[in-house]
Length: 106
Image (cartoon, rainbow, N blue to C red; front, side):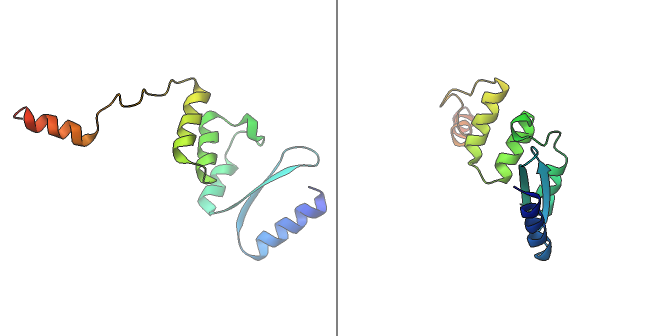
């Protein structure tokens, strides 16, 4: 995005009183984050301005804030951290656990 386009985006968001944060990615490219002030403030404190250099936690938070599938973001985070995903049906549900307690006389 050129300097002129950046100015247009800044003016557009400012006129509408939309909070935003612009991060330079390269000489001719920027990322624009806008919307809820709390979310934009979180992005301002990310260590890196380049998306593929975000920490695992920053990547997770950004994905959630952008509205990506929550469970998909959890699986992505586990994969990035090298944490194995739990085996399906390995843990009992709350209902199953409470039923077992009731049957045991406790």
